[in-house]
Image 1 (cartoon, helix red, strand yellow):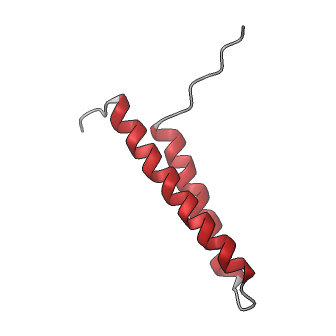
Image 2: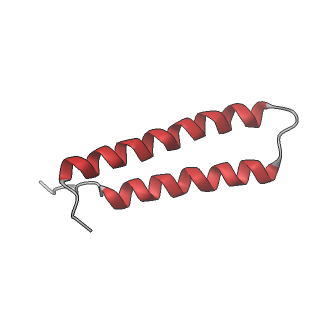
Length: 67
């Protein structure tokens, strides 16, 4: 498998983070519904966390520099 460029990793991380945020928005709306199910809420939370972890793995944040 070919190595990804830094720009490609940044793009993939952005897509993953954006998708996680979309699901988080849906999840927030879903929780406000009187007939929401805990199992669905748990599945949404797990998917949000999974996407955010993948985003961090694909394009880890730069370490902070001490001044």
